[in-house]
Length: 212
Image (cartoon, rainbow, N blue to C red; front, side, top):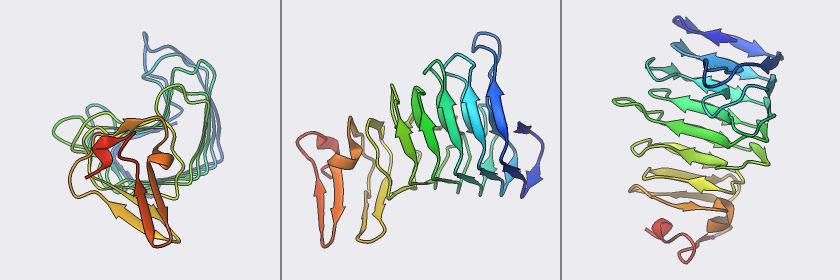
């Protein structure tokens, strides 16, 4: 399913999608949204039978298109077969998007944010997604200068922050906002940054770059 011409307020709801193909022939995404504003992608069930790291369950933007903005990706189920795909991929200038409550299983990377100069996917809100059997990163920033990301009430294992300004928010307790880029990479982000009632713990021994 795709939207490649300028569109607004589209709804992609409750589809069952099986992808085919290989990365050697062509990209094979379950849902690809480019040049769109205010899209709602909700309750879709996507199985990634296509092989290759360029195939995504849900992709916003691409390497040449500037934006897919102000959209919501919520309560989708994405399941890989080969384990080499990506769950949700935000490209280039995709801005002000929300990624909440998705279930992502058996893929290489869960949620990926990727800058393509001169634009970057900024101001993304990531919350309450569930990851299972992710062989690479549950959260990966491919490049630096992808700023304004808010990670809210989100459990994350393997991660790569790669020189970006990020805010961590725990709804009941408060937030931690980094004022300069952090380069943390590790196997348990939820352990490395913990927010409690009236206290914050940053694990400077296992993730020294987070100790700003």
